[in-house]
Image (tube, rainbow, N blue to C red; front, side, top):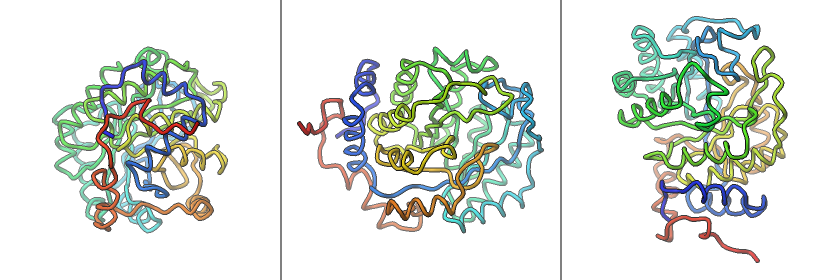
Length: 347
C-alpha cells in the first residue's frame, strides 16, 4: 500500500463517515501494516515561557487577552530546562518538547532556545519546539541547533479558523510549516476537536493535513480542555466516539505518522484511551502538565501500559534492530495505492 498525498475531500468524507466499527477495524489494519503494534512513543512537554501571548486563540489560557488566573513567566534558564529534560528521560520519555508562548520568537530568545535544544540533544533525546510562527531563517537556525521536530498545529479547518483566531491567518500557519519542512525539520502538526466546529470542519482539517506536500511526522489530535476565562470555557462536551473517529481517520490517511493522543487525555477514562490506541494512536505526552493544563501522571500511564501490554517505543538511536524491523520497507507487502476500498471486508 502506497502512502498518498492526493486524497480528495470526498474520499476523506467517505472514510470519516464509515460505521464506527468498520472505521476502527480499518485503522487497526493500517496501523499494523505501517507501525509497530503495541508500542507507544513517549514525549514530555515543558513550558519554557508561559503566558503573556499577544494572540487571541479562543482555547488558550496563555493569551494576554483573557483573564484565566495564569501567572506569566519569562524564558527559563538553560540549566533548568536541561535538568527537566534529564528527569523526563529517566522517566522513560524519548522526545523532549519545549513550548513558549510567542507570536514569533525574538532573535535573542531564539538564540537561547537554540542553546537549550543543543543541550537537550546532547542527552541523546529527540528535540521538539513550539514557538509560534517562524521565518525561513529562524527555522534554519533551529535546525543548525539540532532541532528534530517543530510543532505548529493548524487547529481546525480553514473555514472555521477565523471563529477561533483573528490575530493570524491560516496561511500564516501553512507558511511556517513550509519553512520548517524546507529547513529539514520534522513537522508536528494536528488540530483540536470540541471547539464548536462542525463535522465538515473535522473532515476538512484531516484533508488539509493529509494533502500537505509531506505528511507531518507527528499528528497530535487534541481534545479541547475548557479553561475558565477563555471564550471556549462553556463549549459543549465532545462525544468521545467523535474523538476516536479523528484518531482512526488520521491513522488511515497518514499511515507513516505518529498519531499522538494529546491534550484532553487527563479527562479521558482508561477505556477511552485504550480505544484510541486500538484506533491507531501511538504517541502520548507523558507528565503532569501539557504547558498549562493537566495530564495523567507517569505512574498512571505506566499502570495503563501494563494492563494493555503496551511497550514504550525505544529512542531512535537505542535500537537499530527495532528500527529496521518496524520500518515501512520491512512492514509493507503490497504496492497498491491506499484507498477507502483497499481494506479487507469481514462480511
